[in-house]
Image (cartoon, rainbow, N blue to C red):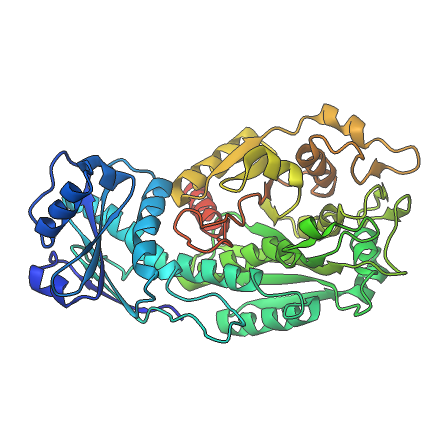
Length: 486
């Protein structure tokens, strides 16, 4: 549950600041430090440490005030991007959060436009980090109970910011749960509980049903698990007076990935409980859209399974038939993500949405290409690519759009099936995986996000935890853009 938020349009006073335990002060970038509560103490600290004023635009500075308040001061450029604002605010708040505060005070200074921009970044960053993620530590971290904002009052109680924070928190809370906590069966129950909370409708395609339907790509991966609790789950949200384009969000939900018969070494198996992150992003987007009561029609499709090593697990050189009739030569059992997505994309496309956007922690190639501070995107048209890029700029979740030209298909030519699952060479696997997936969306406009940025050590953008919920804010910004064009 997010903390309470109180807003005050008046700027913070010296007396109020003195009564606060932990405070973040955000100023517009300037060549001089304006007179404000705490400015004398800040000047003394900066003089002692021989810091220049522009340091505050790169590294926030903490000051202990006479009354005991820990105040952190930062300067934002007036034209700072959403990502830049989130990064700076996160660094400042991290100095306060290290003391596990129960309350936070935020204060913004400057003209009205700056205050609005700074306040939104500060409130979102504070909310998204206020609630500890699930943990089995014997001593749990303390949640922030209340946040006070001075210098700006929103028109709608920061409804959008709250919704984004709630969706992001849901995504991260699911992602960090261990493989013994979040099995496909447990995950399905969690989705049903979320459906009751948000008013969604849920339809499950369990393993046996998928087997009868001919979803051979999904079932090949799922058959290695003795639990047989795998399923493709459809979650639908329809806002009141829904208009514009119907969008299907698809997410990879591999709750644990051993690599199968092509067993991962320990170094690369560590953290594979997070291989379901794409599905959690889909749920986070649906939660935020529901909270905002967006007038849109959305389908979420999540492919929930585990990639186990067992006598029943699928093997190299097998040929399986996907739901759309495509025959697939299995080349590497650790390329399971594209297998479960193949049949899930086929189901999503049957609903004839105006756009499919899928999310998956899919390839190591994308991580090598971009590292963990951005994610890669592929788009079926330049117009959709531009929409994806605009959503990234707006949300602060940065992407790079990659090409996936048709001539790469030759690397997936098979002598025994319609297509190879992947190549053994490994080069350009992020492109080959996209070429493979493109066979299962038909003519539907399509976006594919390879979530190389889903986990970044030390935090990313507004989020302080390694798991950062990348894709939720981007997905809502994408919907905003689609609505504007409707």
